[in-house]
Image 1: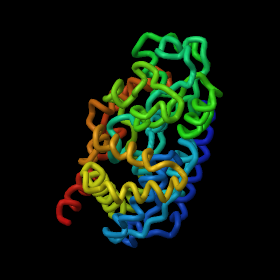
Image 2 (image 1 turned 45 degrees about the vertical axis):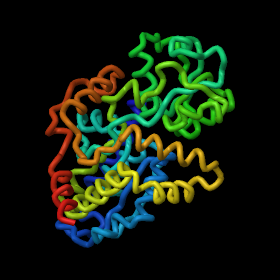
Image 3 (image 1 turned 90 degrees about the horizontal axis):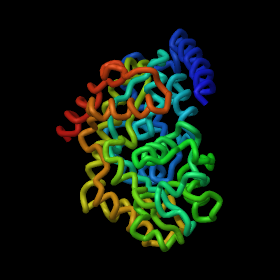
Image 4 (image 1 turned 120 degrees about the vertical axis):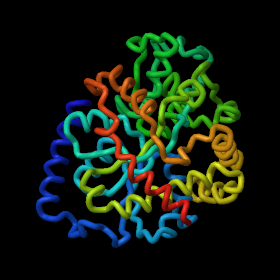
Amino acid sequence: MIGLMTRRMAIAQFTAAAALATGACGRSSNGGDGKIRIASAAGSFNLTIAALMKQQGYLESFGLKPESISVSDGAKIMASVISDSVDVVPISGFAQVFPAVERGAPIRIINASTLRPMLALFSSKDNVRTLKDLEGKNVGIGAVGSLIHQLTVTALRKYGVDVAQVRFINLGSNTDVFKGVRAGTVDAGAGPSAYVPDAATYKVHLVEHGDFSVELPDFTYQAGWTSLHAIQTRRDELVKTLAAYAKLFRFLADPSGHDAFITARKSVFTSVPDAEHEGEWRFLQTAKPFATDLVLSPERLDYMQNINLGFGAQKSILPYDRVVDASIAKDALKLLNKT
């Protein structure tokens, strides 16, 4: 997997270099036209966020002309950012950013998005009740090294599970993994933490110590990142984009956002019961997962890098300033506070 990522990034970096040499997309070096290409991972919650952002018109309220792109996996998102196919990824898993920067990729993290994991480990099997029970069992994940894989392994290691004895099965997105759990295709796998109170409704149960939102509070679930090229050429648009997302995060942290959130989620998931929509909202109000101030602290950054070290995904802890450009988030908050 690491070798594959390296080859993809090498191709993307070559493409980006060529684009820079020819004046990619014909855009002004100062930006200012309001156009912004926004990518996000195609997970169920991110689809709701995208729908809510469009429904509320937050990006447009800052004079932006957004083009939203849903991308299926982290490797494709990374290649899209480096090759200048998209301008920014404001809310996504970001473990892959560190090894990419370590290898010289021209990208930076610019904001925190979700400070607390939003997944939990479920099972439909009577003989799987604890994390230790998963030794010798099949556990659904995404690709090796993906967000769902890292969360699952980190929780298992915390409670002394021998992960070498666990068979990890790539089922795709967390939505696909949860389908596999319900069908019994795998012995356990992640699904939304919002489902924990009503797990029996889905004919599954929470594995003991499997609620990642509770067990791994320092695991930053999602962040935002972009290329150095975008920072240099689209700074004004990036600042406005982050201001719009901060506005959305604050909206979701307030009870008054209930009706709008439910409407947006129903537009994405048209055939699920109302109880599921309400459960997701209750989780957001209880867990308060969003980075309403957009800050990714050095402590959180190092926590995530230490996890990467444990996976062998990167060789050393990188300095904060080599990975993060916090100035865009700071300017975004100043802009938001003026509105």
